[in-house]
Image (tube, rainbow, N blue to C red; front, side, top):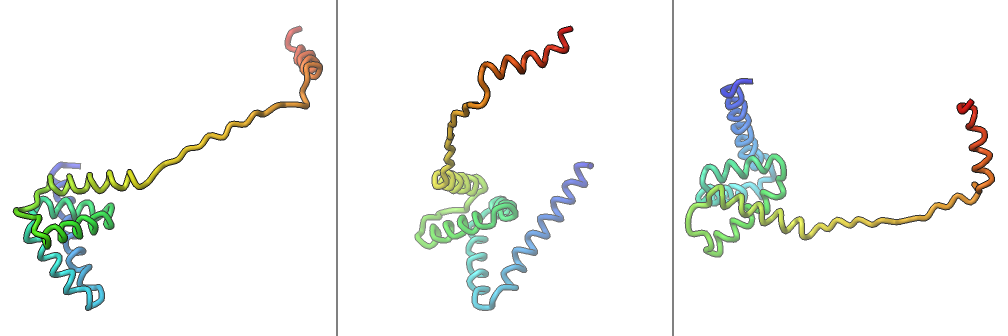
Length: 139
C-alpha cells in the first residue's frame, strides 16, 4: 500500500470518527445533549487540535478512559487549574498517570499449588518385570 493511500485512509477514518463523535451526542436523550455540547465547546476552547486528535484516537480503543480524561480536564478548568492550551504531550502524561493508577488498583495474583504424586502401585519388582518385557529389541 502506498503512503499516500494510507494517509487518505487515515484522513477518511479521522473524519468519520469526528462525525460520529459530533453526531453521537445529538442522538442521545434531549436532556443530556446541551450538557454534552457545552462540555465539548469548553474542551475545544482549551485543547490544541493535536490533543483533540489524540483523544479521538484513544476513544476508539478505550472510550471510558477518554471520558475520565475529559471529566478531569473539565474539573481542572472549573477550578482555574488550566492557564493555557492543553497540548498532546499533556494528554499523553494524563493518560499515562491514569494507566499507572489502573495498574496499581488491579493486582495479579499467582498461586502455585505443589502436590507430591506418589505411584504406590508400582514397586521395584513391577519395574523389573516391565524391563524384561522390553528386552525384545536387545536380541
